[in-house]
Image 1 (cartoon, helix red, strand yellow):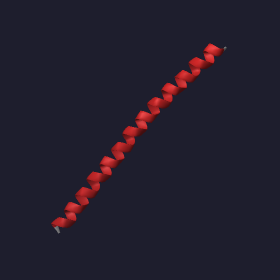
Image 2 (cartoon, rainbow, N blue to C red):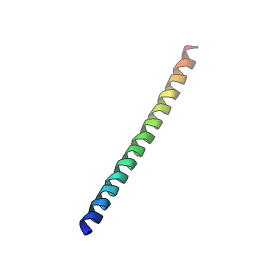
Image 3 (cartoon, rainbow, N blue to C red):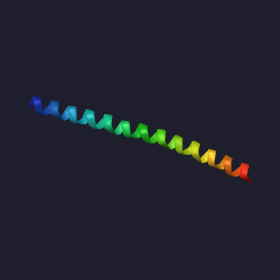
Length: 48
């Protein structure tokens, strides 16, 4: 029975690491997209 508990513990630990990794990458991408939007707005203003 202890092996079953260990397997579930490892599975859930890896699942949480995976989910938090995805969330971290998503935040990074959102910041990068916002920076690109600001750069695009600045370029539009300069062309006007």
